[in-house]
Amino acid sequence: MNEFKSFVKSRKIELILSAIYVGIGTLAVCSIYPKDLFYGNWSLVVLLITFPVTIISFGYRYAEADSLLPVFVIQFVMFIITYLILISSLFKSVFKIKK
Image (cartoon, rainbow, N blue to C red; front, side, top):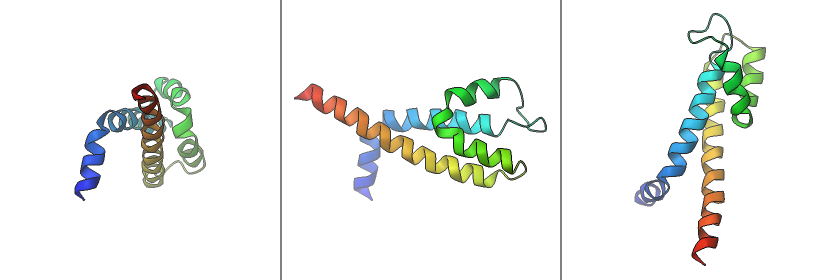
């Protein structure tokens, strides 16, 4: 468990970036329909910006408008995937610089 904590602490920037990116996308997906709390024109713009991480959740929400729990599960999986992609890409760029 200590290895996991040190792994996350050393990659705090990637964690924060992926949390913000996926979090904003999740908020936009949960604000698509007129009966939603934060409904507005901004959600379409944010969905276009966060398209890679919201496309599956948007498709599910388009098919099943009332259920939000699966959207949160899908977005959590997308958060993990985004975090891992950021770790691998930023790690490679930093490793090349240090050589």
